[in-house]
Length: 626
Image (cartoon, rainbow, N blue to C red; front, side, top):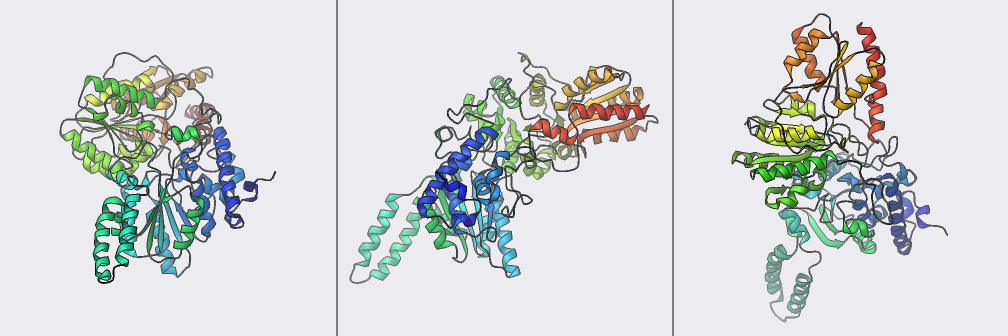
């Protein structure tokens, strides 16, 4: 039996199908998506929720002429399926395969690259403005949702788009979720009413009655219209957007394909800014994803029949951080946790369960999270701000002006530092050592293993002279037995793990233990290596470095960070100041380019940080040094 999905490769194929065939297509895409992502891993729940919406958009609009601008791009898998990449979905997020996010270089249908949230409205307004200035003729649609409306930039875009009066459509995919459940007044405002029968009944009944009055009906209706505005502000979420200059339509059932198509057909050529409020269910149609949308937001391979995932061999760094923070919070009631819509992803879900009154999820609002923490710290609390390395970039101004300049003690737990794997360049945390190192008053730590992470968290919470950042990788720890006690680490002091006489290796964070492995292999080649766990990228252990360059003629650094401005750069600055006459120095790190997606081992090979590549390069470097 021929499947409808086999006949659909591009948006124009959708226009040939009747509504019955489109409904069948929804079911077939849902099964195709579940089956594929169960093997590859990826963002399942967000995409299950937008199948009908995406089909309706591509059925009505004429992409790629019309510009569909996606937000939080992990909801664009269906878009990829419908725009010529169905057969390549099995490669999604795999090394050499298609990206898990829209990417301009991948397809003409991907109008704007995305990976972080809340950018679509601003980008779409840019498209619409350029269209008008150039005298072009195309429609522009921004699809925002999955929590992205809690980000401040989305309201900056709304404010400017509404004032511009340009033809622009914003589709708000309101699924009441981001990755963790949405929080905040805005989320409550948007989701408190799906379809309010009371409002609609009152409006219809009063309108019908006043229209039948023999005299004064016009005046009465004007009065009713004013009352309706007040009533609408209480019952219907649209008034907010109307005040910003948008014509509001909704809320609309985002899983009623026929109604979506009809609505898009009717509004696609209306003038001015338009907002369509669509209600969807994250994980729609797959019971395990519906029951646990957070787990199925983004995951590895799983069994489609049971929803079960492969058990981990060891706890992740995220889990060790989260459980350790709870231990410390039991000892000190001034410790609080702050995250930006990533309670599960950062491990703060443990604190939320143990001490809900000391846990704060501020939504996708990293800038607010940092300054909010500053205010809490100034009143005697000890904030731990847990944010992915790549997302903390969004609060750079706050890190400098609101925190470091005022020497406010805050602990920044930076998860997903270095190369993170399948999510690719928008999610790699390979710039944090560089962008933090140049800020005065910051202390930067990187643990070599899970026990050192625990000690660093203990140390950071006892440091009251200014902000501390602890950066650690995504993924499993070494599975070491966790110590029951904590040890304070002297600020700025490194740790010698192995002595040697020929070459010194200075490594940071998750590159320390591989450096030890490499040193043992090099011993068999006649190269005796000293291995230093740097621990502190700022302040660097200058005394240690000066002693190293006096003893060794060959020195290297290894880091899971861009080589520009990171550990290697910091060490080279000290070497240059000391001006030794006979030291050869080489940096190993991530090259000056954006690294693609794929599993971490493939990416380490790609950038030359795998053990085999490092051993070959170090041998060559050492032979030249001699």
